[in-house]
Image (tube, rainbow, N blue to C red; front, top):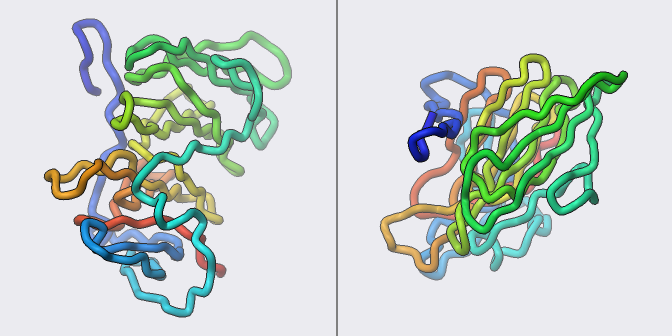
Length: 249
């Protein structure tokens, strides 16, 4: 937990571990990387294998998911699976198994605050709703994303920070025990693996030693193990990277 003020706690992000040390195997995917963003470097296509080794793949003749001149320079609003709804309250989203219904509810403020971001959860077959407070420091701007296709897990984002410093926190809610995980600080691009065990996410504000100006977003690619609640960083250093797609089986 992180402390803010004298009465409140905000939940710390999921910790990072070393992929090689854990001997974890990830689903392979294609990505773009610029290894010299502070100079005249260009983006090149890579295949990232099961051990997170980056292999140059000049045969990837595809258009990037987003323009190269935007990667690292702005945030990308996560696409809401609910859509619509009021400014502070989303439409309801039913879980894949049909047992729960959830929506986000918040009180929008002009600065990061606490006690203003909630999930409203109810049984799909009737019954009372639960209003669950999210232990986050946020201005109240929330975006519902999706339910996991096989698990009772719901994903959403919260906006944190102000102005050029703002980004999104990716959160996971477990409907079985009403627990939350703060997955990490993201630029808004979030991808669930085909096997349902991993979420690949691009980082939010890229903090460096001042070598790159203005501050960059989407500096790193990270992957979250849904089953073990562990993060792994897949790229490091002064580079920019962006997910393209999962490799076909």
